[in-house]
Image (cartoon, rainbow, N blue to C red):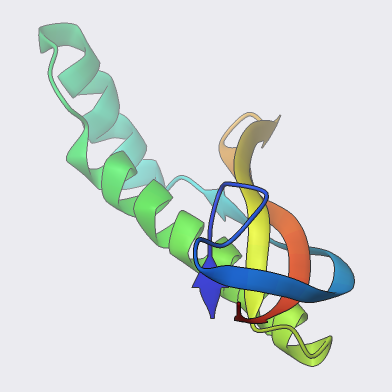
Length: 106
């Protein structure tokens, strides 16, 4: 699956528009990690546990978007975007979305 943030795929021609595709996940914070992050916040620096959690969440959301595109018969997704939002006190949603297309060589 080709995934790009542009509205075209270099060297390819869009043959068919398959439509909007998305994938999402909601991740909650582990209470133990939340306490450690709070302590890290006092002294500063990167909070690696949260960074790893969010990276896994992004990959899961992108994977779900790809599955949505495959089900529509696409071989590429253009205009891909990622969005995150807080859905409650200790949970964040990651959404990956774009336009599924079928591309071929020019």
